[in-house]
Length: 602
Image 1 (cartoon, rainbow, N blue to C red):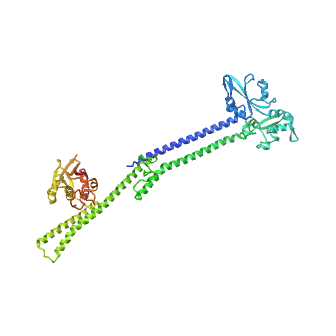
Image 2 (image 1 turned 180 degrees about the vertical axis):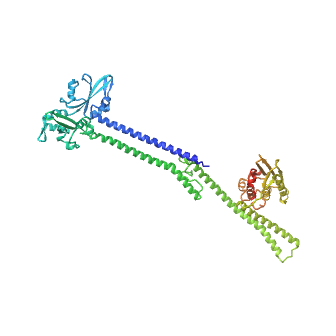
Image 3 (image 1 turned 120 degrees about the vertical axis):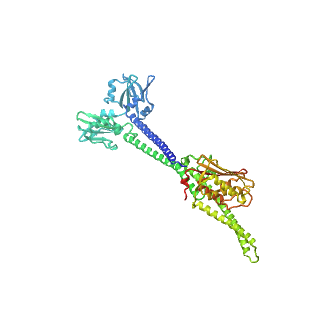
């Protein structure tokens, strides 16, 4: 029997497990995307820092091994790519470690000398950035230098550039040096307004026409935000300010750092797109998996029902399954995806088996019905032929029959007519019982005495006069409501069946036993030839008349079916046990509880 709650719990468990699995995958994807963002941003930040000397990333990579200062190899590679060099200066100004340092870079600096280079107060062909770091109790200064003509330009600007008649004039040497660094210059008045400009400003993004003090400081301190370097030269005579614009060291050969924030936004956007694509692919795969795991069993069950509707009473098989049902493994067990529908699969298998059994019974009943109709037709035709024959004899004028002969003919006609009447009555009775269109009159009766009287009366029939029969009454009295006429019919049929279908000398034992005060059992047992399984299964069918002897078949073939229906009407049940060569036992079981409520006269 299908348990809806069990099925519901199984489906809930399946979907929860699936939801947890998908949630886990989504979490992994999100963590993976987050990690990728962090890695890319760190790499971007590292690359930005590597072209902006003086930032802590260089000093953070410093380690000391056996008294030797060392840098991270990846950072050193980036320094080389940018055309830069490194020096670590101790507190006395001595360069104790150097990397990619050109020959014109000093190995020792006086305090004032280093400051003049750093502040661009003295000509130095390199742009310098410095950072102070403490390591193992010692204080070091990290110098990062990049080839730069800016200091030279700054020192020569006021001598080689003039402002005349609203126009900037530049001599040839300064002009060439400015072009070499792909830069340009602007002149600001005392209020920060741009008076004019000179150089390649048309090739870069548009610059403002007014600068505040904060603008100049931000552009000088965070050049990577603007994609350009900015240097100022103050003319104390005119109180004007000159600005030198120059690309970042890497922006001449690469546009990567022209706008670093766009790159950061791009990292987020592309990673978000990648995450969405992976989630979409995950849900597509999940839909395909669900369609295969849950959809294919349902389609299989629908196909199975279509087969049953067409009369094919078997489970569909796969194309290459060699006759094995599609839902089964070679071992006969359900496949994994069908186990969630186990109850439905079992119900369909049970339905298929029931339909097969019913079809088998139907065919047997059809065969039995045809045989029964043939037998009934023969049995009706035989007495009818006798009646017609004797009627013709009595009607004939060619011979005068004596009174004795006429009485003999009449007796034969009466006997044959009675047989036909009995057969018709049995047909009527069995169909009325089947359709519950019968009225019984149940009266409480002493069963011990009633059964005894019925057996004695049955033994008075000439065919059963020599039958060996023994009756064992119940020790306790049994009062049970019955319809005497039809209960007697039950006993007559069962006793006649035991006598007629067994050889002469068969012993019939009838017993009544009361069990626990709530039930009594009436048994008819014989030690005859027994019956086979096929006969036992069909013994109580309306169209079956079986025999285990080679004698002439007697009766209408309805007696056992009528007996079963009458037992049921008396609120009982009938059971049969038999073995070939040993005998047969038929047990009638009757419940004695709540008799009045069940057996009121209808």
